[in-house]
Length: 272
Image 1: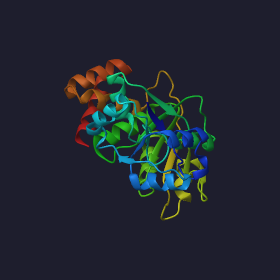
Image 2: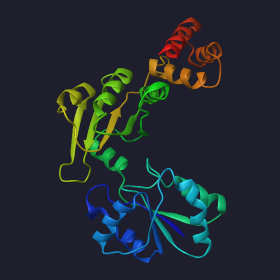
Image 3: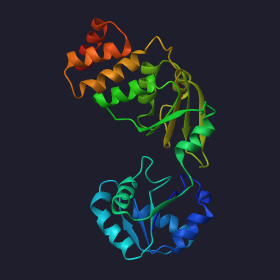
Image 4: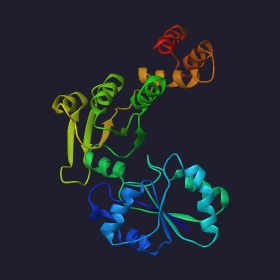
């Protein structure tokens, strides 16, 4: 069996009893970073063979894992912190098990996206998780447009060095909506800054520290008034696989907007 195990995102006391028992009983521990996992296992008093398997090696190492499972071994997989497969490696190993018809399971536990969502106080009847945004270019613009058009709470991860730029970009795409900036989850200096995007931006220190989770309560659009963000998102997706003219025509029909208006915006996106 392959066990995907959630590990603490800050406070080591958040490890579950079941996770500890499984780590004690498994034959090997595969992990994103052997140095990081060694610290956790040392804290727990567990000694196991560690095998490095990160985002860029999980595909090539999957056959080795499958051979071990076929031989009757039990393997645990952990990322550096949180739930494997959620903006962390692990999904590639799951797909390999599915294709090979071999068993795997997931042990629930710490997750930054879920913890931050509840801590934020923003509406959670419906939310979308965007992971880390692309850093630049058309992919970033498309992601920002998707956030602006989502009409619910949008959640994303960000590094402290780019958090101000991302807040500013979402402000431009979605307007000054309610948001929360959660930092240092479950650690001594855990914090949650709430307010509109502009209020959170103005309250930030010059140097932001700690890994960040950003949450935005994006208001739903009126059914008869598509947002600029929605139009941009649709155009960018269509322009990936068809001509600008055809993309503008399809977007115009889908959004019930004048063709000239949509075509003019498509030209602007192409030239940005």
